[in-house]
Image (cartoon, rainbow, N blue to C red; front, side, top):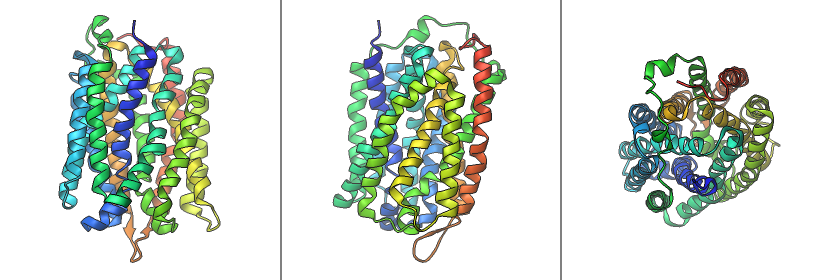
Length: 399
């Protein structure tokens, strides 16, 4: 019998490194932009390169990931992610940094989809909200521990040092995934007749889930890659205190995530996700569009991170209930591709909409925030429709 707690802990650790690898690049953006002569307004291309590559690998992985032991597959994905991250430490300009992030994204995309598939395989639907809340605590942990540590490493030893540190963690987790995770072949032992890609994509719940995924990710990533530059150059928040900002925001989110997971199990994804989306609407308007000069950065940043968690835990829990076990890695690989493609579109769009002023401040932030707000308005109705489809199918549809 598989030990759920051990699996959730190890998957959470894998997600911690995977998320940290992606997250650390954004707050470090102004640091390496200065050293590599990259305009701040082009930082979205760095984040977009990772997510675009992850979208491609997620789509390709949908054709074969369900054929393998998930333990071996996730270990291989983590090793590739570590190699790509290490390559980023030796970048000499925009082109070489983009290439390194593409390599990291090619392996980071499957690592994400496999991690979520493992949790959905091991944990039954009635406890899945709590489990996803725990695994998504990796996001908060990356903010609490990883990002502040990475920012401090960069301040003390240069921007390349955090890339080396994250790559080292990736190698350790590669070994941990292979040796400490049990064989994860339940999806093979209980294999149903193979579902074709066309059959999968015909189902209304699947199509709605992918559309919701695209909207959620694009709404976030038109803002997130530029957040560090916005804080430092538009709001004049000191670079030396940036680590503290992520530390506090991540700590609050870390403790809130488990509560949010229980709320999802009790009330469903739609009500909880609606509360989170509404909070994001209010905060996005207040912070990025109205931007009153008296508004304190710390409380609004913490509230923004908390609202993201309040939307993302219900969303991830809900989408995990759409596929059957035998098609879960395929479904989540395609979902990972949609996630990363939408993230890349949001990041690239922000890079096109923003421009850099002589003092380094970003011009055009209110326009990008308005696009995010319009997309966020669409999320609650989509959650309602997907949740209704899942309930009609009896929690998990049979292919």
